[in-house]
Image (cartoon, rainbow, N blue to C red):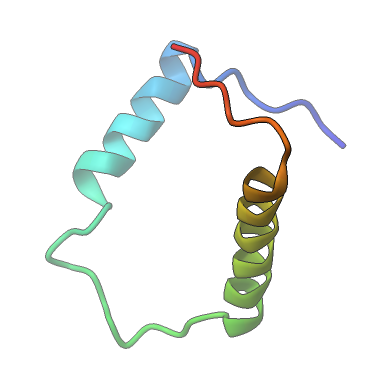
Length: 65
């Protein structure tokens, strides 16, 4: 396993800003592109597991700013 890049580095902030302004929900979105349904199902399992874990915990979530 490698080391993840620092999300607060100037380079990573620029990459994210460029993606957000140039690619995220752009008019050029192609609704006909293929969707990896097995990856979507795995993602749903992860999110569902997280939600159940939080909901079933005896202690309420503590939000920290």
